[in-house]
Image 1 (tube, one colour):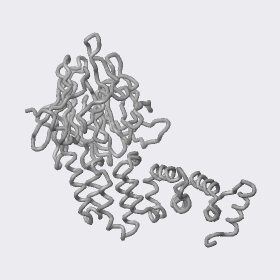
Image 2 (cartoon, rainbow, N blue to C red; image 1 turned 120 degrees about the vertical axis):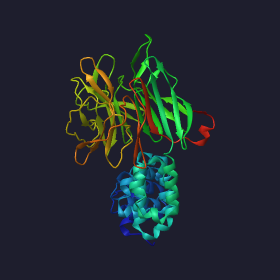
Image 3 (cartoon, rainbow, N blue to C red; image 1 turned 90 degrees about the vertical axis):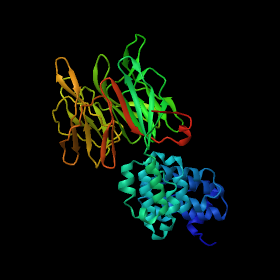
Image 4 (cartoon, rainbow, N blue to C red; image 1 turned 180 degrees about the vertical axis):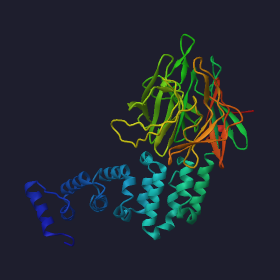
Length: 473
């Protein structure tokens, strides 16, 4: 009779005679103990269902303990418990009571689950750090745990600023090896080539591998001049732009294609809600935002976002003005819009965080700065030292005729001070879709013009893919 109480046994007797069971969090444990002692399966199932219905962040550790002790043989209990833990993994890992109860085996099991893909990998690493720091004796498991973290899904900035600066990086040789492997993951540079002139489509992808080895891969087999590129989890999304119509002319497109460098393959995704060309994109969390743009007949300010997990587009709050020819990049959870042409033919530097009605995101609007007409060449993923760099663009010479030439100027924006600073100009002006890269503190700008366009990004290509593609000069 060890562990049994009169109150708990009384509840079970009433259940046997009357078929009713009054449950509450203070009494459920003693009722479970009595039900297990007399092997009353129905009462145990009622208690387990009650605990699963009442589980929350505050009592999760206690519910876990009770279910693991008393739910042996009850179908579906462990699955429902795991679903709750995986859905709330990161916030739970900030609670000392949960960290105390979570075992190494259970932690590894969760880290190896694809259900955690809803969280950024850097947040999972920080959760692992919390678990290790909770008990100094756990440090000996560092080498084992870090093998379950997918460092290649982090950004280089996260690796340098949050991983390499932690005490575990100095402590664990395995962690240093994982980080070195992840950093080598970013060394391949893919160049997506766009249109040639105004009547041809070049669908090739050129891949640069160090040391200066180029490979040529096939692009999407459609008559398309894509405008915008977004990189998510080593997938490249090509969005919108212009496609060849039945009349032999190019028209704004709503099509979206996803490139998988692991398989060297293209997949058609859900179309945007409206056709767009010369618009801006930015990736925030699991969403790709498409901001403003134009068709051949109109300029608009509508903004929509794509859910990469649902393959679905939805409209969000519009951009403040009609604009096209602008560029976007994401910094600290905010989408920065630079340059472009508005309906009043003025150039502005703005920051706009789309705010859907069903979700809440931080929003900030920078002070406006009137400059030359400018189309910046900044890919969304490339920032340096927490600052935003703009290279070149289109300088309008005669507004009446819109004659233009490539602009050589370079500027840097500091979000902390809300100020722009003019840097040294490039030797020649550049415009159109180009690319900027920062390697070892130096900036590199790819060639671009108003008639030939390239977009540069970082992707990882497995060796087995390169075995079946052609090298080129």
